[in-house]
Length: 459
Image (cartoon, rainbow, N blue to C red):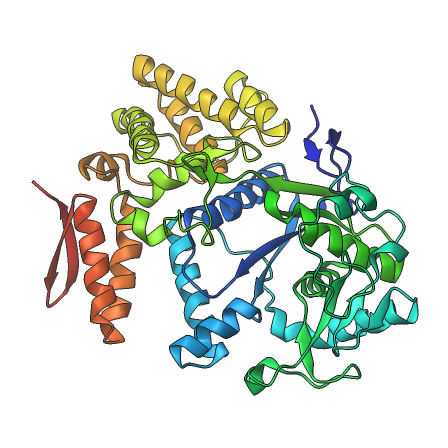
């Protein structure tokens, strides 16, 4: 069975084969980086971490680009509120993001472009659009995209222009020829700091959000690539506008597949900063180990809504303990590679090849764990661990995981010990104490000595 992926553009499962044989090029819209990442952000990055892991497990080379938006209204506002530069804020938040998602085992992308590094490419793209009559200079100094001049606008969201107009609550024109038009280049405002302004043929200003991704993805992956991903909330208008910009400029499809992950919900509402119903990754890791949080997300299908609660995390932790218990019974045999023709491996592969079906793949892991419990087979234990590795789980020491009552594994613990040591070296004692308290909440007691830091499970 070949890999099939649900394509938002066609609203159907389609057979997947990369445009370049053996090489997948994937772009995912990443973080607007003005605050700590919450679980909803982690879910998006986790979804595409699993995607790229499975593509690699399938023998494909993957160039994975996940951008960072480091210039934006919220970023400027937060930097001004804190009395620091935009670069100081974004550097701080990027470092925090890397630390937090690293604990979750989310692998770094191949390329992580920052929007501010690609302003010349954005200006070039805006110039192309203006030359084709798709962009115009507004009376307020902005440059806008003329939506009605792009044939096919709405094909990703599945809505016609008239439907989109009918759905508008307020028409804020701001120099726009049509309320649906969107900004490509924002004219500088007196209250904005100099570092938020770039000189251009269109006047001093900064890029709009949508043009950033069009420029970064084409600069890193080419005008057409295999997979464009992001959260379901980006389908419209962000991804719709990316299509209009990129295809309007070069006349080529931007991406072969459009892939969107589902929301994390709290009490049936999308988790978001605007609603105030979010939990940062750091909040959660004060009470739960990183692998439990990862497993909680991985065992749900990436397109489904994921309901967040302590009860669901507790259940995930107990389920993960069952898998680690099987691995604790016998030392897993080392596997040079997975034999995908074996019955369990074949079932796992069939599940993952059907739109990255992690719920069915995880069910295979539990079936394998049951067999290990019965047979004490080192070979089956090795297969259990190897298949878990395709999802980024079950790679820790089983006894350490089970000994730490809350489920932290050795890799998690050592990573957090290292982060605490780095915080102490930087004289960030508040952060060092936060990490110590977070480990204590997971049942881990740290012991500092002249030779370093060791840990043991709380009694």
